[in-house]
Length: 494
Image 1: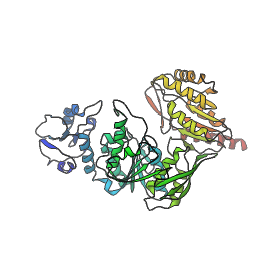
Image 2: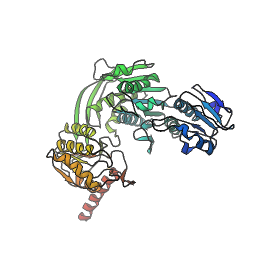
Image 3: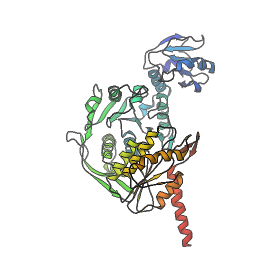
Image 4: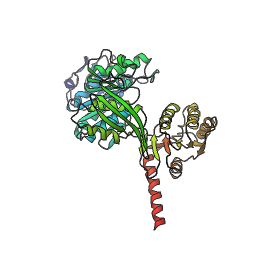
């Protein structure tokens, strides 16, 4: 593709060479520069891509997109622009031939609930036969394949590339988690989303490399509603009017408020062996009575967000009801089917706050016993271990202390720190250092009515020890243990 065809949507000057040159790819990582590419020098918090321009030239970059004044050989084109991140977004869009025009696009922003809301929407749409790809915390998901990403909202090149791949794989819809940092760093620039969703707002991501204060954090989230056609807003959240300030889109609302366009009411917790969730009804734009297969009353808000968007598609109410009743979010209070009269969950909770949130939610279901299996990450602040031990000891009927990503620490040292916290509570616990053995213990000792949480790994499928990542998927471990028990019973019967 000619360079001049990529330079659309942003202002620039040509300080060296010509735009009438052939570009084989658009690259922003100097380590990936190839012969004939355009190299976009990004300025990050820790790294300035301008430092690697000599390497890019040496590897064969024929065009450089920069913010600073630089010198380059006569055969290399230099494009100067005010913000190379904006340039990367628009160049990537053009390079992949503007895939957003061929998809229905949905973006979800908010402090909490993005991953779950995206999963709910995807489940509803795919139940209705609409193939949907997603981008977010769990990676890029297309069909049954997941491609890992570095950030919740990847760089703009990866987003545009993923959308083109979704189209090639037959997808009709793309849903993305639009993080505040993704919006701040222009990763979604160049896309006008069909739908933008706001879940909620609370303090998070404040720091030198993220947002300077809450005002900036909120402002960055508000940017989504200047680049979408229809905004679906949780009007029960205190910040909702601030987040739509200066919006350019049509606005619809959801919540418990009678003033919302989609209203929830009559929620109640639902629990049977192997299923815990919430039941509620909706009125307003959509009248439904439904169950959501994710525990906690906060699931109602995520479901409302999903319904608010999905009702605009040509799908039936039954598709919405079935989708929400069968939805799973990998590693987020994810129920794993087991043959016993107990409930087994996998969750990513790996600090005291997230653990307390999960356990307090599960306590509402009044289990016979709430059993929490967890460890703590090595080479991380010790206070996390004390706090996690204290939370589990206080809120669980039994804690099963084991390993997590111990990294370069001895797992027994980490466990000793966890015990400092749990011993303050007087809570019951057992120590089983090997995580597979700990999972087996939980399953073999489960009683009818128990809720068991395997906390810490969530969607991760590895265990990191001494600098090596070993494959470990807790779902596979659970099924191997259950199959082993089943085979053992069959052998005895024979």
